Amino acid sequence: MDGNKNQDYGKHSCTHTKAPGGFWQGSFTRPAHIKEVVIYNRLDCCSNLLNNFDIIVDGQVCARHRSSTFFSVKRFKCDKVGQNVIIRTNLKKYLTLCEVEVFGEYTKLAAKRSDMLPLSHCSQSSVGWSGVCSRAIDGNTNQNYWGHSCTHTKLESGWWMAKTQKLAHIKEIKIFNRLDCCFDRLTNFVVTVDGHVCGSYHSHSVFKVTTFRCNRVGRVVMIRSRKRTYLTLCEVQVFGSYTKRSTGNKLSFNTCFQTSTGWNGVCKRAMDGNKNQDYGKHSCTHTKAPGGFWQGSFTRPAHIKEVVIYNRLDCCSNLLNNFDIIVDGQVCARHRSSTFFSVKRFKCDKVGQNVIIRNNLKKWFTLCEVEVFGEYTKLALRDLSSVGWNGVCSRAIDGNTNQYYWGHSCTHTKLESGWWMAKTQKLAHIKEIKIFNRLDCCSNRLTNFVVTVDGHVCGSYNSRGVFKVKTFRCNKVGKVVMIRSRKRTYLTLCEVQVFGDYFKKRPKFKYLGCFYDSKEYPQFSIKAASSRKMTQRKCNRFCKSRGTTYFAVQSGSRCFCGENYIYGNGEAEDGDCNVPCSGDSGIKCGGKMRNAVFEVDKNVS
Image (cartoon, rainbow, N blue to C red; front, side, top):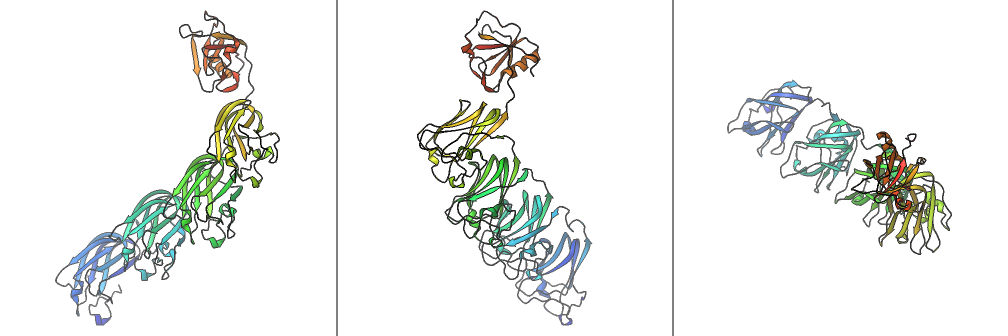
């Protein structure tokens, strides 16, 4: 490539390899549309060394030459776009070239695709022969190791990783293999984005450049060898577009807890914003005893949509091969794998205040960072309480959901068939009640109890199996929440949360009586609605919109409208119309085939 076309080796114008076989490569500063390649052969001797070779442009064969006779100068048509031209001999002989000329035009198409995403913050499992990880993201696509453009690990099942600048929708990942030797090392590997498989390669045949169609959202690109070998990458290119997170805002933990602490790996390291994955940088947690869990808590409940976990990379990455993510006692996601990950995203879709990462292996547990994305909810109602003994009742409504008694967050009664109660600030439509059980011991004490709202049963539990967090669907109107044990034991509650809406003041409608109804002779001609959330107010609104004078509620959930309520079916006892309204258990909505009849109040909306 020096412009000297003299074809006599003694004139210092020709190349020569030392080992039989091999190739020669020339690279441009930017990609080009290559139309023709001209090769000058050696003529003072050895011309037959160029009888069998290929011309390759960025891994794609441009032309082949097979002949039993030699040539002096030969032109080859190409029509390929690329940045690297390789002349590769297919003979077990020396390779010698006196000049290589390439003709074409530099192109703007491959200079840098507009959708190429720069990578940074790389790391790899080890470094051998000075092949640092940054060589794969330096923009140099030279596929000859001695061009100082390729990474190199030690002999192991190695890995390489790098990050995009921001969260991205990654569509393609292109990998450049080493070509001067050893290209068969890259024949069994997997490519992941934030821990999710993007592509894999397993073949006896080798590649020069390969592209994986990815379609993943994330930041961390990892290439992991699935066999014990030296991992070498000459360039990794990522294509796509930056994107906004669809899983809400990042939620900040207020407190944390872990079952034990070893090597100064305190729990707060997983929520300090430091994502360094090297333990020596004081950024990762560490338990002391095998097994266990880590817990982070928010100041108030949230709709959790995504959890992101950063694994340790300086060693011990396989400690995170079997774990569960739990939100307020409900499993959000599970991870089971024989291979490790660097960063992994888990879809969640749970509402709660506590996120637990629970290790299922009898090993130490280490986390470098836990990020949670979602939205805070606005439904929790808490206020007054009664007095208990030993562990005061207010501990169950203090916002501290730590489920270990010695964290001073749980109530405790004496040995009895005990109870606990608290009140909402105002009359409320209570939709859910969530109970946090004690976990450091004694969880089986809370296996037979009933939950009531203003004396009406909201839910009950009777089982030999214990729970961590239990949610009861309630749908009751009231103020007083009571939890009453149905067996003689110590009653312990670590937190009680109530969800719903404050209830509007009930209007009083003019009651006209309870009347029999029949299918043959219905009392009212207009059936306005049937609803699981029926109230007197709702039925009044339906009938007011229809312009009738009277409304009737029946069976707790049915509403009728009419102009005349006295028919031959007769009047029933008022006690026959005592079925609670499905939308407000504190008032009555008729009975079975019994109409509770009221006068429509046009002043009530």
